[in-house]
Image (cartoon, rainbow, N blue to C red; front, side):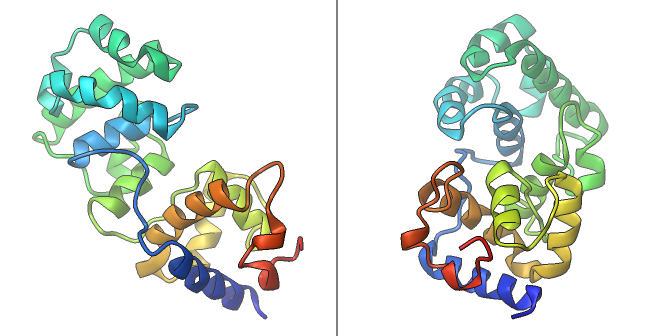
Length: 207
């Protein structure tokens, strides 16, 4: 099997295993997804989902966040880790979206990464989940699994994104990223992968 054929086989298998390819973060709109994803850096999605209800209750829009007291934001997100840096970024994101984008979250990676604390992973997630554009979200599960399956041979997020964009069908790329996260939590876990029950055994060179 060529590499692209193995990638397509993985796409098909994970589609069957996880038919509902959804983001683990709770959100109602583009702004909330952007903020939740920024909070998820070095923090679990489960923890973020515990924090965001109160955060979004007080600051549901970019304009509200732009005018927020940073100390109050820090209080609300303290359990997410790196809360001082994140609080500063959240307020700056609110200001930028309000002042530079008319209150609308940008729909391109190029514009999104101009926002404070927003990297390509976050930008890809917003572009894919909100705007329906082809996206490759290079989170730790995705990078690890793509390497394990021999699709890439690098842990550099940008290189992984570029290589996987060439291999994945554009219309399936975003959902495949969500499915690899679920797969990485359930079966292909980092320390002790459950190879005996893995549906991708036939295409895995590590097997």
